[in-house]
Length: 143
Image 1: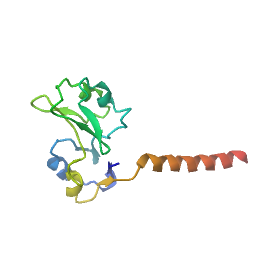
Image 2 (image 1 turned 180 degrees about the vertical axis):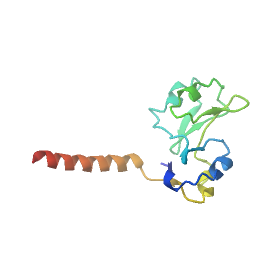
Image 3 (image 1 turned 90 degrees about the horizontal axis):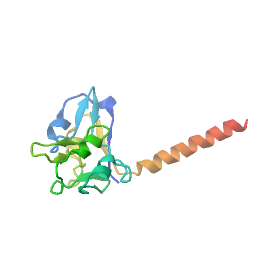
Image 4 (image 1 turned 30 degrees about the vertical axis):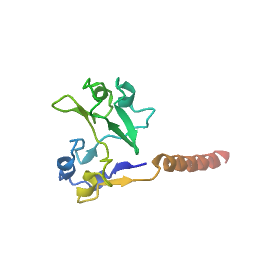
């Protein structure tokens, strides 16, 4: 699964990522790159509300089938971080992790490497770390 990760502490707000994005789907707010989080398929609000089923998961990315989009705006309204916009024709646009490329364009132009792609199973890693911390807590609670 491909996941876009930002490291705000490295961002110098140069704006290159914003200018290169073909979907105009990334913005830098107070030094923090903001983009679609590509929610889990069963919890992605945009996917759940789309009446046409025009939003699907492709290689870990939540992707809009622009030909199937009817421009109702429900996905835009449902997105908790505001990462979906309607273009001048009323078609929903959002980050698709540049699924057709090896690497998202925003990652390739970032001079400070504030954006990177991870192919690891992030959830498994987080789950393992939480389990280890819980074991530590259990050991402490015994004493």
